[in-house]
Length: 487
Ligand SMILES: [Zn+2]
Image (cartoon, rainbow, N blue to C red):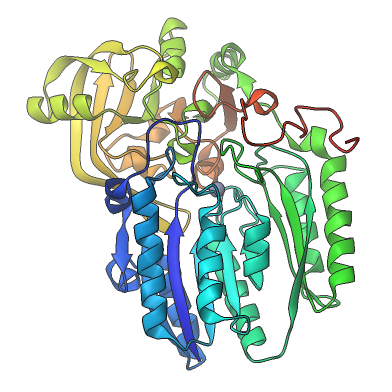
C-alpha cells in the first residue's frame, strides 16, 4: 500500500497579539518530504515512526510537510495557506494513495481560518475521495470540530497530559487505518460535547484512572478507540472545549452510547478533576516551610510558552526575591536582549542585567540584578515528549544568594531538567526550581521532585477558566455556568 503522511502543528492562543509566522515554524523545524531524515528525533519523529511501521508491512510512505511552531497568536494567513497548498500539491503528485495519515494539533487558528485542521482535512478528502481512509492524530488540547469529524475516518488524540503517548497513539492509528484500508473494519465515530472548558492533568487522580478507564473499552466488543479531547481554552473559536468521541467498528449506536456514558462520567467528576493552581503567596509559603526536604518544583503556569505565553514574566521571580527565598533555579526566560548582553560580556563576566518583563503587561516589569555569566551554550536543547526541542542560545546567569537563571534566545516551555543541567546548573544542589511550563515538565521533573506546586500568578496562560473573555465561543460552559445542560 502507498500511505501519504504529513505533519503540521501549532496551538493558537487567540488572545495573544503576537502572530505566528514562517520564521516561527522554521526555528523549530519545517521540512518538505524529508522530515524523517533531517529531523528524526525532532518534528520528523512521527514520519520516522510511520516509515518504520510501514516497512515492516511492506508498505511505502510518501512524506509531505513536517512543520511545528511554538504556540503564539493566530498564524499568518499566507503561512497557513502556503503549508496547506504544499501538502495538497504533494498529495496530488502522489495519487493514487491507499491511505492518509495526518499528524496535526487540532487547535491551530490562522487569520481567516478558525479551524485550520478541519480545513486541511476537508481539502485532503476532496482530493482522495470517499473511499481512501484518512486517519488523523491530534494533540489532547484539540478542538474536535464537526468539519474534522465529517472529513476523517478515524481521529485519535493523545490521552496523556503531559503528552508522553504521541507515538503510542500513532501506532494505534496506523494499525486501525491499515485494517480499514484492507476492508477489515468500518470505523464510525460518535461525539459527546462535554460543555466543559479547562485543562486536566492526567498524572493525578481522578484523571489518571479515567485514562485507564477509556483504554479498558478499546479492543473490546467492536470499540476501536476512545478519546477525550480536552480542548485548548485560550483558543476563542466556536468549538473550543472538551469533546469525548468513540470510534467503533460499524456500530454507531454503541459509539453514541459509550461516548455519552463516559462524557457523563467526566462531568460527574468535574469538581475533583479540575484542580486550581495555588495562589502565589501560599506557594511561596510552602517553599519556605519545606526547607531541607529535597527539591520542590514550582510551575509558573501563567507564563507557559507552550500555551502561547512569552516566557519572560517576572511575577514569580519578583515574589521570590521579595520573600527573601534563595538557592533556586528559574527558567527558561525568553530574553533576546539579555542573551545578547551576556554573549557580549562573555563567560565569567559580572554585569548589571535587566531581565524579563519586556514583552507586555502580562510579563510584569523588568528586574535588574547583578549577575555573573556562568555558561553560554550556542545550541541549547532539551529532550522531552519523545523529541528534541531547541532553545537557541542558552545562558546561565547567577545572582547572589544562589539564584540561577536560564535565559534562552528561542522561546520554549521547560520540558526536562536538561534545560538547566545542559548549561551546568546542578538541580540536586537546589531546594527549588521554577519552570515556565503548565504540565509537560511533570513527565521528567515529577520523578526528581519531593513536591510539585502549580503556582497561580498573573500571565497570559493563567488558568482562570471561568472568566476567559470569549467573543466567539458560547459562554454556556462549565465552570463559567454551573449547569450548561439547562439550555
Ligand atoms: Zn497539548
